[in-house]
Image 1 (cartoon, helix red, strand yellow):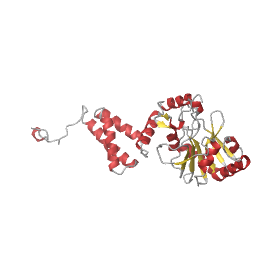
Image 2: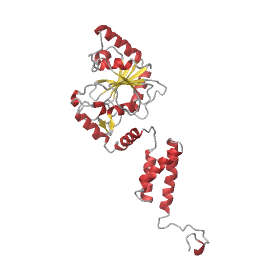
Image 3: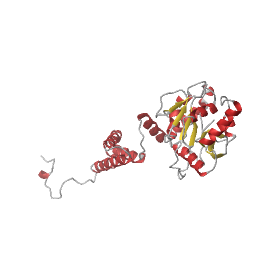
Image 4: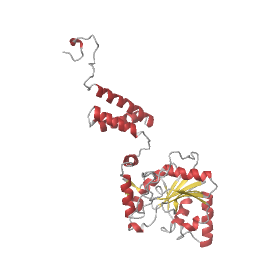
Length: 320
């Protein structure tokens, strides 16, 4: 792929509108195929290639973090969260064989199938696929890319339908090894959802460079950085970044520039001491922001002396 497609307003999104309905009660398993040879990357370890400071595999695992079971079909490696490992036999047997191996470790009626090279896949897109699957009688729902091509490795399927077609292929060919995915999907009733951003995959070094450049664009870099830091520190917490940024601004302008990072650190520490969670962060931020404003008020030219109206000079606290 030569570039990440834009939305109509020229921005890049993860391809999901904010008011998409969510199938909140849908339990699903996830199968992530991460054992390909990456020939177009010169045999590099593609799942381990970093985009925005995070391995491609970890970015995909974050998108399906609420799966009941997540199976990664590849040789085991360190990952940002626990997964179940599987491997096709023989290794390198192709995507159908890999999917067959991964599916054996799943039990949910719905399974999300993903490749490990999707830098812009997010949880909202996974939920969107599951919502569409639950709203139709189709065997699966898959994304299509900017050129309208099916992307069967960014999809949600009904597990019984996948098992049915896999069994039919094995009966016809003796083994799933070496079979292309289109042989599997040809027998499925599929619904297609256009999404040129979430379906963007990294097949070449040019694709990697495009993805790395995109996340450093002004409209995305902060969210990407926060996600990378949370993954690195093992934090699963959604906070109002606007509140924290406002606090840092108030501390920097009202006290001193170095006060900004120190204050936000102390807010985080206080929130942890209070049990953690978004509410604890919001309350600690509110208190610190109010303090910063009071501090700044004392330094204004028209600030009134902090003393009683009838106080004499000798009665002031700093009189001596």
